Length: 218
Image (tube, rainbow, N blue to C red; front, side):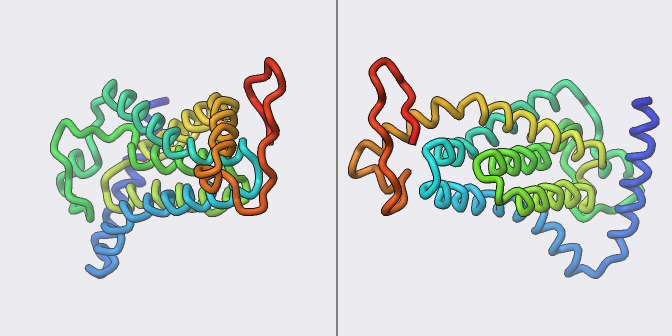
């Protein structure tokens, strides 16, 4: 079953790489730059989620602030998983083809895709923090994953698993930290100088913690 999936994935990669070889140089260059620049979109989404959350709730702010951390955690997990597999990249295995991306040396393995894991994790963390950004986050995560196949750096199964691993880890990490981060945000909001970081002007101030209750809700 695994070998059959890999055979199909490799065939799709070969078809994509052969297609991209016939594209205009400017299209190839745009794809080469885009495969990294797409990740920058998530930095913008992190900032937007934090800014919007300041007018919503302490929990939303906490999740938005934790989103980059959740993404880093997911990336670390992806790298760990990658170390157990020594799968060649398409550009390393299909030496008869020319890929858009510069081929990494042997030892920089293909499965799963770290780029896709980062994209999946960032998208999931943003969605957990602010669901209204879901469509934009998911679209750019899929675009990032596809771009890795497009430039010849990964197989389709690499990016699919990368997306799933990243999204799963980031979601679990974010939900696990939701309550502690809410408490942290409430404490920050109680400090006048730091309050603008977690509360928009005119937003309701956090309630004082009840006796014996560590976590106050906004």
